[in-house]
Length: 276
Image (cartoon, rainbow, N blue to C red; front, side, top):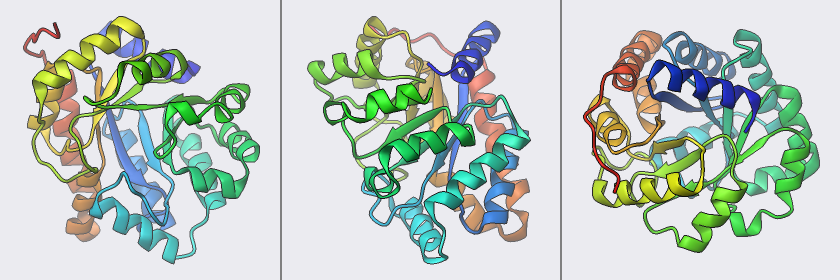
Protein backbone atom coordinates (compact mmCIF):
# COMPACT_ATOMS: atom_id res chain seq x y z
CA UNK A 1 0.00 0.00 0.00
CA UNK A 2 1.26 3.50 -0.80
CA UNK A 3 2.46 5.41 2.23
CA UNK A 4 -0.22 8.08 1.82
CA UNK A 5 -3.03 5.50 1.71
CA UNK A 6 -1.47 3.65 4.64
CA UNK A 7 -1.13 6.79 6.76
CA UNK A 8 -4.60 8.05 5.93
CA UNK A 9 -6.46 4.82 6.62
CA UNK A 10 -4.49 4.28 9.82
CA UNK A 11 -5.44 7.80 10.96
CA UNK A 12 -9.12 7.15 10.17
CA UNK A 13 -9.00 3.86 12.06
CA UNK A 14 -7.46 5.57 15.08
CA UNK A 15 -10.20 8.21 14.98
CA UNK A 16 -12.89 5.51 14.48
CA UNK A 17 -14.26 7.16 11.33
CA UNK A 18 -14.72 6.01 7.75
CA UNK A 19 -13.29 7.32 4.49
CA UNK A 20 -15.20 9.80 2.33
CA UNK A 21 -13.87 9.66 -1.24
CA UNK A 22 -15.43 12.00 -3.83
CA UNK A 23 -14.89 11.52 -7.57
CA UNK A 24 -14.84 13.85 -10.55
CA UNK A 25 -13.65 13.78 -14.14
CA UNK A 26 -10.34 15.56 -14.60
CA UNK A 27 -10.62 18.60 -16.86
CA UNK A 28 -14.40 18.83 -16.57
CA UNK A 29 -16.11 21.18 -17.26
CA UNK A 30 -12.82 23.01 -17.90
CA UNK A 31 -9.38 22.96 -16.31
CA UNK A 32 -9.96 25.90 -13.98
CA UNK A 33 -13.34 24.73 -12.73
CA UNK A 34 -12.09 21.16 -12.41
CA UNK A 35 -9.35 22.32 -10.07
CA UNK A 36 -11.89 24.38 -8.11
CA UNK A 37 -14.13 21.30 -7.72
CA UNK A 38 -11.22 19.26 -6.40
CA UNK A 39 -10.19 22.06 -4.05
CA UNK A 40 -13.75 22.08 -2.66
CA UNK A 41 -13.49 18.33 -2.09
CA UNK A 42 -10.31 18.78 -0.06
CA UNK A 43 -11.66 21.75 1.91
CA UNK A 44 -14.87 19.80 2.68
CA UNK A 45 -13.05 16.99 4.42
CA UNK A 46 -12.39 14.39 1.73
CA UNK A 47 -10.30 11.53 3.10
CA UNK A 48 -8.94 10.68 -0.35
CA UNK A 49 -9.64 11.63 -3.96
CA UNK A 50 -10.80 9.53 -6.90
CA UNK A 51 -10.16 11.33 -10.20
CA UNK A 52 -11.18 10.05 -13.60
CA UNK A 53 -9.15 10.30 -16.79
CA UNK A 54 -11.69 11.06 -19.55
CA UNK A 55 -12.16 8.26 -22.06
CA UNK A 56 -14.29 7.96 -25.20
CA UNK A 57 -15.99 4.69 -24.26
CA UNK A 58 -16.23 4.51 -20.45
CA UNK A 59 -18.12 1.22 -20.15
CA UNK A 60 -18.16 1.20 -16.33
CA UNK A 61 -19.63 4.69 -16.08
CA UNK A 62 -23.22 5.80 -16.29
CA UNK A 63 -24.55 8.52 -18.59
CA UNK A 64 -23.71 11.44 -16.29
CA UNK A 65 -20.00 10.65 -16.01
CA UNK A 66 -19.82 9.44 -19.62
CA UNK A 67 -21.13 12.79 -20.91
CA UNK A 68 -18.68 14.69 -18.72
CA UNK A 69 -15.84 12.59 -20.13
CA UNK A 70 -17.05 13.09 -23.71
CA UNK A 71 -17.35 16.86 -23.29
CA UNK A 72 -13.87 17.03 -21.78
CA UNK A 73 -12.32 15.11 -24.66
CA UNK A 74 -14.18 17.32 -27.14
CA UNK A 75 -12.50 20.34 -25.55
CA UNK A 76 -9.10 18.89 -26.50
CA UNK A 77 -8.13 17.68 -23.02
CA UNK A 78 -5.32 15.09 -23.17
CA UNK A 79 -3.77 12.54 -20.82
CA UNK A 80 -0.81 14.88 -20.31
CA UNK A 81 -3.27 17.57 -19.19
CA UNK A 82 -4.70 15.16 -16.62
CA UNK A 83 -1.25 14.53 -15.16
CA UNK A 84 -0.57 18.27 -15.02
CA UNK A 85 -3.87 18.90 -13.23
CA UNK A 86 -3.04 16.24 -10.65
CA UNK A 87 0.35 17.82 -10.06
CA UNK A 88 -1.50 21.08 -9.34
CA UNK A 89 -3.77 19.25 -6.88
CA UNK A 90 -0.70 17.82 -5.19
CA UNK A 91 0.55 21.38 -4.61
CA UNK A 92 -2.69 22.12 -2.74
CA UNK A 93 -2.44 19.04 -0.52
CA UNK A 94 0.72 16.98 -0.30
CA UNK A 95 -0.73 14.29 1.94
CA UNK A 96 -4.20 13.39 0.66
CA UNK A 97 -4.20 10.06 -1.21
CA UNK A 98 -5.00 10.45 -4.90
CA UNK A 99 -6.41 7.54 -6.86
CA UNK A 100 -7.29 7.66 -10.53
CA UNK A 101 -9.83 5.75 -12.57
CA UNK A 102 -8.59 5.10 -16.09
CA UNK A 103 -9.25 2.79 -19.02
CA UNK A 104 -6.52 0.57 -20.40
CA UNK A 105 -6.48 2.20 -23.84
CA UNK A 106 -5.53 5.49 -22.15
CA UNK A 107 -2.50 3.75 -20.70
CA UNK A 108 -1.56 1.86 -23.87
CA UNK A 109 -1.75 5.03 -25.97
CA UNK A 110 0.55 6.84 -23.54
CA UNK A 111 2.85 3.83 -23.07
CA UNK A 112 2.53 1.60 -20.01
CA UNK A 113 5.91 2.38 -18.47
CA UNK A 114 5.67 6.07 -19.32
CA UNK A 115 2.18 6.25 -17.82
CA UNK A 116 3.21 4.85 -14.46
CA UNK A 117 6.42 6.87 -14.38
CA UNK A 118 4.38 10.01 -14.94
CA UNK A 119 1.85 8.88 -12.33
CA UNK A 120 4.65 8.74 -9.78
CA UNK A 121 5.97 12.17 -10.77
CA UNK A 122 2.49 13.71 -10.54
CA UNK A 123 1.92 12.31 -7.06
CA UNK A 124 -0.66 9.60 -7.81
CA UNK A 125 -1.01 6.87 -5.20
CA UNK A 126 -3.37 4.38 -6.84
CA UNK A 127 -4.59 3.42 -10.30
CA UNK A 128 -7.87 1.62 -10.96
CA UNK A 129 -7.97 0.35 -14.55
CA UNK A 130 -11.70 -0.12 -15.04
CA UNK A 131 -11.50 -2.57 -17.93
CA UNK A 132 -8.45 -4.59 -16.86
CA UNK A 133 -9.31 -7.61 -14.69
CA UNK A 134 -6.72 -8.91 -12.28
CA UNK A 135 -6.16 -12.00 -14.45
CA UNK A 136 -4.89 -9.74 -17.26
CA UNK A 137 -2.77 -7.44 -15.10
CA UNK A 138 0.48 -9.43 -15.02
CA UNK A 139 2.28 -6.95 -17.30
CA UNK A 140 1.08 -3.91 -15.41
CA UNK A 141 1.56 -5.07 -11.81
CA UNK A 142 5.40 -5.01 -11.72
CA UNK A 143 5.54 -1.67 -13.55
CA UNK A 144 3.11 -0.11 -11.07
CA UNK A 145 5.07 -1.54 -8.15
CA UNK A 146 8.36 -0.25 -9.54
CA UNK A 147 6.86 3.25 -9.51
CA UNK A 148 5.34 2.95 -6.01
CA UNK A 149 1.80 3.08 -7.40
CA UNK A 150 -0.91 0.77 -6.05
CA UNK A 151 -3.19 -1.08 -8.43
CA UNK A 152 -6.77 -0.94 -7.19
CA UNK A 153 -9.20 -3.66 -8.23
CA UNK A 154 -12.98 -3.92 -8.32
CA UNK A 155 -14.97 -6.65 -6.61
CA UNK A 156 -18.72 -7.29 -6.69
CA UNK A 157 -21.16 -9.82 -5.22
CA UNK A 158 -20.62 -12.01 -8.32
CA UNK A 159 -16.81 -12.04 -8.14
CA UNK A 160 -15.60 -15.65 -8.09
CA UNK A 161 -13.60 -17.04 -5.17
CA UNK A 162 -10.62 -17.57 -7.49
CA UNK A 163 -10.64 -13.95 -8.63
CA UNK A 164 -11.23 -12.75 -5.08
CA UNK A 165 -8.12 -14.57 -3.90
CA UNK A 166 -6.01 -13.11 -6.72
CA UNK A 167 -7.28 -9.60 -5.98
CA UNK A 168 -6.52 -10.04 -2.28
CA UNK A 169 -2.95 -11.00 -3.21
CA UNK A 170 -2.28 -8.25 -5.76
CA UNK A 171 -4.38 -5.22 -4.81
CA UNK A 172 -3.00 -2.14 -3.11
CA UNK A 173 -4.42 1.01 -1.57
CA UNK A 174 -7.95 -0.24 -1.03
CA UNK A 175 -10.44 -2.61 -2.60
CA UNK A 176 -13.22 -0.99 -4.64
CA UNK A 177 -16.51 -2.70 -3.82
CA UNK A 178 -19.33 -2.37 -6.35
CA UNK A 179 -22.39 -1.87 -4.17
CA UNK A 180 -24.70 -3.20 -6.90
CA UNK A 181 -24.49 -4.50 -10.46
CA UNK A 182 -24.57 -2.08 -13.37
CA UNK A 183 -22.86 1.20 -14.17
CA UNK A 184 -22.18 4.16 -11.92
CA UNK A 185 -24.87 6.54 -10.81
CA UNK A 186 -28.00 4.72 -12.00
CA UNK A 187 -29.43 3.80 -8.60
CA UNK A 188 -30.36 5.94 -5.63
CA UNK A 189 -30.33 3.22 -2.97
CA UNK A 190 -27.86 0.67 -1.66
CA UNK A 191 -29.11 -2.72 -2.86
CA UNK A 192 -28.30 -6.33 -2.04
CA UNK A 193 -27.02 -5.53 1.44
CA UNK A 194 -27.13 -9.15 2.58
CA UNK A 195 -24.94 -10.17 -0.37
CA UNK A 196 -22.58 -7.30 0.38
CA UNK A 197 -22.27 -8.29 4.04
CA UNK A 198 -21.26 -11.79 3.02
CA UNK A 199 -18.75 -10.50 0.47
CA UNK A 200 -17.23 -8.04 2.94
CA UNK A 201 -16.73 -10.84 5.43
CA UNK A 202 -14.98 -12.97 2.82
CA UNK A 203 -12.78 -10.08 1.74
CA UNK A 204 -11.75 -9.18 5.27
CA UNK A 205 -10.74 -12.78 5.90
CA UNK A 206 -8.36 -12.66 2.91
CA UNK A 207 -6.99 -9.11 2.81
CA UNK A 208 -6.11 -6.40 5.35
CA UNK A 209 -6.87 -3.68 2.79
CA UNK A 210 -9.69 -1.22 3.46
CA UNK A 211 -12.88 -1.80 1.46
CA UNK A 212 -14.51 1.27 -0.08
CA UNK A 213 -17.89 1.11 -1.82
CA UNK A 214 -19.07 3.01 -4.87
CA UNK A 215 -21.75 2.82 -7.59
CA UNK A 216 -25.07 4.34 -6.56
CA UNK A 217 -23.81 6.34 -3.57
CA UNK A 218 -25.62 9.66 -3.86
CA UNK A 219 -26.57 10.89 -0.39
CA UNK A 220 -26.14 10.38 3.33
CA UNK A 221 -28.76 7.62 3.44
CA UNK A 222 -27.09 5.39 0.84
CA UNK A 223 -23.67 6.06 2.35
CA UNK A 224 -24.85 5.13 5.85
CA UNK A 225 -26.49 1.92 4.61
CA UNK A 226 -23.18 0.78 3.12
CA UNK A 227 -21.10 1.86 6.09
CA UNK A 228 -23.37 -0.10 8.42
CA UNK A 229 -22.64 -3.37 6.60
CA UNK A 230 -18.93 -2.98 7.19
CA UNK A 231 -17.24 -1.01 4.41
CA UNK A 232 -14.38 1.27 5.37
CA UNK A 233 -15.37 4.14 3.10
CA UNK A 234 -17.73 5.37 0.40
CA UNK A 235 -17.08 6.82 -3.06
CA UNK A 236 -19.49 9.28 -4.68
CA UNK A 237 -19.13 10.33 -8.32
CA UNK A 238 -22.19 10.81 -10.51
CA UNK A 239 -23.91 12.95 -7.89
CA UNK A 240 -20.91 15.31 -7.88
CA UNK A 241 -21.29 15.87 -11.63
CA UNK A 242 -25.06 16.33 -11.28
CA UNK A 243 -24.68 18.96 -8.55
CA UNK A 244 -22.20 20.96 -10.63
CA UNK A 245 -24.51 20.77 -13.65
CA UNK A 246 -27.43 22.03 -11.59
CA UNK A 247 -25.69 24.77 -9.62
CA UNK A 248 -24.15 27.24 -12.07
CA UNK A 249 -21.83 29.68 -10.32
CA UNK A 250 -22.94 28.31 -6.93
CA UNK A 251 -21.35 24.91 -7.56
CA UNK A 252 -18.78 25.23 -4.75
CA UNK A 253 -21.48 26.04 -2.19
CA UNK A 254 -23.76 23.23 -3.31
CA UNK A 255 -20.91 20.73 -3.47
CA UNK A 256 -19.83 21.70 0.05
CA UNK A 257 -23.38 20.94 1.26
CA UNK A 258 -23.32 17.50 -0.41
CA UNK A 259 -19.85 16.74 0.91
CA UNK A 260 -20.79 17.78 4.46
CA UNK A 261 -23.67 15.28 4.48
CA UNK A 262 -21.43 12.49 3.20
CA UNK A 263 -18.55 13.37 5.51
CA UNK A 264 -21.02 13.42 8.43
CA UNK A 265 -22.15 9.90 7.49
CA UNK A 266 -18.53 8.78 7.68
CA UNK A 267 -17.95 10.28 11.13
CA UNK A 268 -21.19 9.32 12.89
CA UNK A 269 -21.49 6.31 15.17
CA UNK A 270 -22.94 3.51 13.08
CA UNK A 271 -25.32 0.72 13.91
CA UNK A 272 -23.51 -2.59 14.29
CA UNK A 273 -24.35 -5.03 11.51
CA UNK A 274 -22.82 -8.50 11.44
CA UNK A 275 -20.98 -9.56 8.28
CA UNK A 276 -21.29 -13.26 9.11
